[in-house]
Image (cartoon, rainbow, N blue to C red; front, side, top):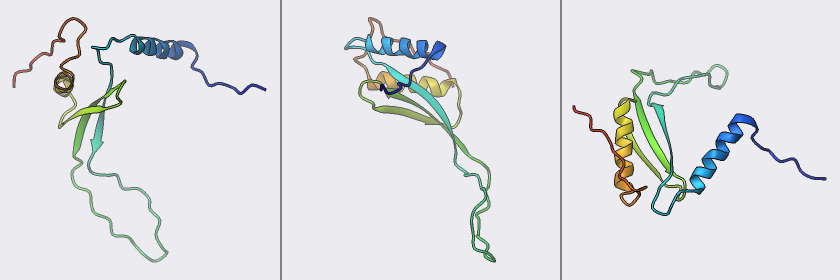
Length: 121
C-alpha cells in the first residue's frame, strides 16, 4: 500500500512551483532572499493565569505599549538572516533592508546594480 503524499493543488501549488523554479535558476553571482517584516509588542498582553485558591498573583501594570518593527531577509542558499529594526513600519524600513542586503552581498548582480532610492530627512 502506498503512503499518501501531501501536495499543494491549484493556484497555491502553481505559485510555489514557480518560486522553486526561479530559485533553482539563479546564477552563482545572484542571491535569492525571502523578505518579511514583523511588528513586535514590547509590552506583553496579560491574560488568564492559574493560581492557588485564596492566593493572588502580583501583576506588573502595563504602561504604554511600545512597538518595534523588524524587516528581515532569509538567504535561500545559506539560510543566513539579515535584518534591520525600526520604530516605524514604512518604506524607509524597507529601503534600509535593501541597503543592508547591498552591503551584505556586494558581489551579487544580474548584470546591473539594483537601484535604491534615497529618502531625504
